[in-house]
Length: 552
Image (tube, rainbow, N blue to C red; front, side, top):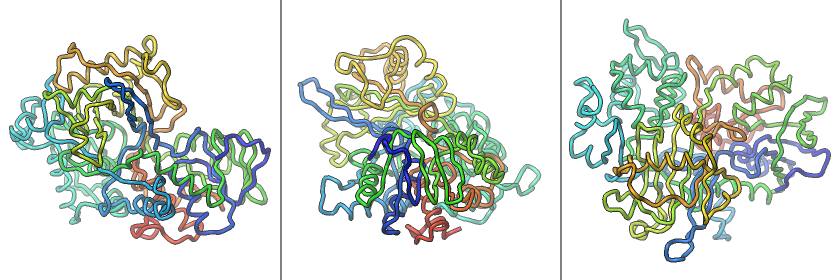
């Protein structure tokens, strides 16, 4: 891979702006299906992968032994084989087949365990476990919230399922189980208002459809704090979007996910290696600032000048909006601009905390191994992870260096921005500087986040526990990073108004990204829309049996 090439002009058949998963997948498909084609990928950051970014840290434990701990700055997981995400699984298989004789390059999938009965909640000043909820038959929720009788004695996930069942019954359909079916659900299904009038799902907000069903505000407040995401409840998105993202994350006790043993960033790294081997070029640390149509194709300007017969803009809404301001070929297309603006940017905050010992596991009063713990505190959620996900027995007995991840969305991120603004940065003797590509937290932020973690874990906020040896701070949505995920706004019909308009803004000019996809927030969404452009724009055979390009 190159970084700011010294060439003044870079010529290619296809120039791809953006080295995230949609751009890399497009480059890889073109090189595999059109021998001899010249493909260049230009990426503004210093690495490929977009929101797939893994940090590896070597920590010396209390016995003097070095352990490598990794944490995900961005995306963390995907569904098991056979449960969906056919493009992602097909890509993993294809890359592994390419590297059949190179064991070190193989992408090994392991369980991303969502916890057990020891995982915790901290809500309205009370810390309790999944086991406590189960033993009390969900009675605890009505002691914390003023729930209606019909809402009492139910798991929060079951309440959302009741709402969904009513919507499905009104439309005489089953729960959507593919990108095309979710798109149909959002745009073609209805939910009746208080007068019995059929209102399209995409004209309901998520908050309003929950009220329309009859949930109390106390119940909605409860759901917004304990199901993992606040944004769908309080941001300006349509109900179909809110339901899809929350049903992507079912009850943590029964949810099943996978991840990659060597970190999620190993996927784009493997894809980039394959692109390079096939003759493609990847240029890093290069931001494209303008796009101009010429008689023979396009000219793009960054630190150097690029020309290409065809261009794929594989970038999300934030940089796309910036590019439209300097590129009349984009801004003069009203349907394209409407499609660009059809999605709401969703900010995500992640703080990584690295410790010399896995104190939350070795303490029998906590005994957490992996998975999320949810709270109404600004913390939002805190995840613990298996050190040996492929070996549960070894992991059960492991108490060495490990990481916790704070993960939250929407307005709760504002609290951490405020804390990050206070005082000096947190550094330790073990880590006087942060690893490359990560930012340190403020001392004030670390102090506050540890107070909140102790409360969630059932400890007094003044309890004496080990402090982290390293902390990392990341807001997806704050420069230089793009937003964590995207959601379609109220009244948007993505089938009619987005996919046909966003993907082909002009002849030989294409766009694809997770932002405008039927699987927003997932790697699969980026791959789906990349495949859509490959099929519709380049005549390449669909990559997966559930290809969105051939199923809508």
